[in-house]
Image (cartoon, rainbow, N blue to C red):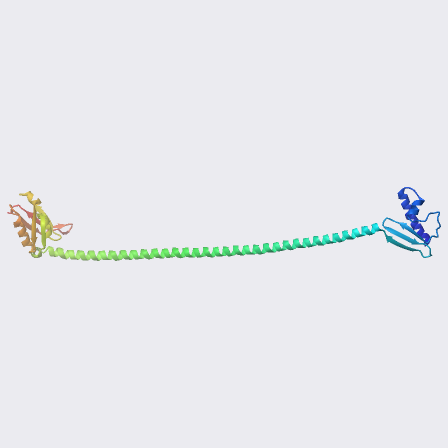
Length: 287
């Protein structure tokens, strides 16, 4: 066993010497190896490696090997430990940062989702309100249009009914007027009534024709014929009478100065199939 350990140490030393380029007994001595010229029975020998002190006890049949770290190795291990701890802290910080970023992004995503849902709800509510307003406007427009149509229809019906009432009233009045007129005409065509009906005439300055028209009634027409004294047609007289018609005419004829004027009733004349009697005022001599 001793021989095996010695061989291993010798191999390591040889490799170190080969790395240096030459064999040197002083080098072996400085590393704590026994010189090949020293007694191999020394109790303890030290092999100085870069990071550790390897000690081998060959004094007994059961050799003991222990390794002690050098100060540089301890410093390096401390640096590695500090670096490892720093790297672990960095990883923790990175993990915490990643988690924070994830939480922030999740919070932003949740806020965005809430805002998007709120905006969508607002848009949906606004659209529903707009739809209701449009529907109400359509209903109001239809109602207004129907109301206008109903109003126009009622106005048209009322106008037509009013026109009908007016036409009926006009026709009724016309019929009554025609009836009264026919009665008056018949009455005014009665020779006795024509001559004896009282008149009511008060003219301050009128021509003879104007006074005669005031003395007669429909459908009588007055005609003046002054061939002997044409200027009488323009003469103006004052005449007032409430006497029977024939007596009033006699008074009028007698009031015309310088000539004898006569009046004559002509009953049996027609115009367009209707009675058209004439009162003639003339200064001609009668046979």
